[in-house]
Image (cartoon, rainbow, N blue to C red; front, top):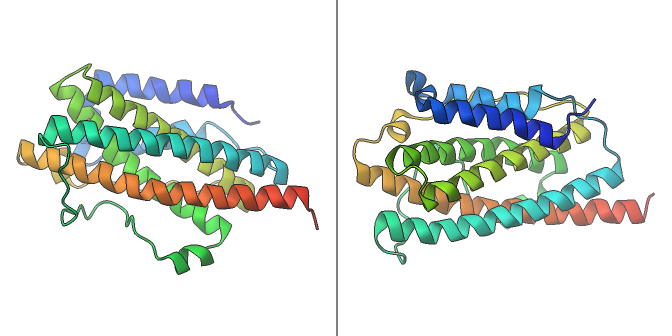
Length: 238
């Protein structure tokens, strides 16, 4: 039986409260294995996704389109605030800065068109978990510096929206493949968790949110395509 989304949210909220009470849970052995485990528990092991028909998938993709668009807009707003507060220049841009631990946010149009439905969902499910880990690491870092700041609140909202997107993707993958996706073994490099200098940490945050914005553009396009495809399938069954 499927656990309602609100119940999943309550489970995850308990995890968040625990981590806020003891942020050191994020720093075990220089990884975020604990955080990844809690995310998986909140999104996957608490439920057995019920079967979805074509109509349900169409509705699910519509909901995910709305959520991914909202998250994208929130990330865009956050980037402006982040560059002003952390970098000191709202016009700052440097695309030469990279983080090797982030997924590739660029994809050729031809390859994107050729992807299968399950492949799109699987890739987004995996990559958004990696982004979520990076975002939440910065959320914890920001809470440690200025608890209750508007910036920390904005980052937390994006973290929770990413969590919901990951949960929705998990259900959609289960519906297409008739099996839940296997949990990932995710870690973060120590320089993300414990940067050598405060300036490095600020630049890392800029790169994370910049690349997340680019990646979410692709996610939105994926959901628009899937929403249109499955809506057409419902209206014109073969």
